[in-house]
Image 1 (cartoon, rainbow, N blue to C red):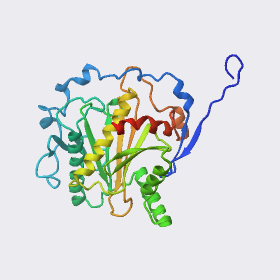
Image 2: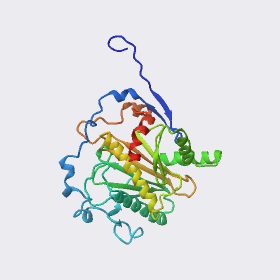
Image 3: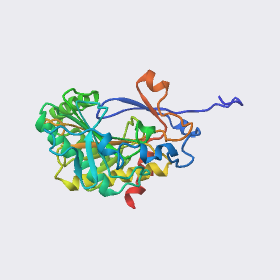
Length: 330
């Protein structure tokens, strides 16, 4: 009841991700609260904008970043137009690298050039091709991005992170198991079937950029989560297929334009693959808006998520899709 004694209703939805079977909770009433850090689009503080302190900026990169092993590349770093890739000084896996977009120190959300994103993706793919030759057992691969500290990024200079490992991650394990179970039962790809089902209902389907088709996640694991699925591509080891990466970059920038319209300046991106040639015959990229990089912002994880293991988001995925569609129609 409210303070006057009138009954009130608050609805929650519990949903299960059809791919991972992970459960989440959608609590629309919480969207009525004032969300700190979203009243405007904040910019990084001056200390973060100081290029002299950035190891990824010209003048520092050669002396402050590590070099690739000779078995990976004869050159110290991989270059693709203005994108430069080198090992991660603080690696997550035995094969971790950083792929810069270009020399620009700070790029506001949705402002990166299509070419710079495409070049960085291709650089990641080329690196993974070389890793697979040197270490064939490192089949659990991913490309990720943490944009700004609100998403876990330590440096604001735009970059992707790329990983390969023999040690299977939790999400790789779930993908591998679920994909094999679905194929054994239905004789088809779980991601392709999910996409076809979403296109039939149109409730969460957003649009397409080439071979990539975009949907709002049915059971989101984060705020405003959007997936891109490419049924025609199954491997991250496709550095020569320029159109794949260009169309992926187009969709990613569309998602960023949507996040910018919400005054969210931080986000995570992730693409996973199991490079055994048979597990998941499709690629999926996920993007999730994070707490804005702003003074006194509220974090997007609370004690509920830690206690329950369920993500609690505020906006129905069907609403997310309706809001995002305009950025595919422009």
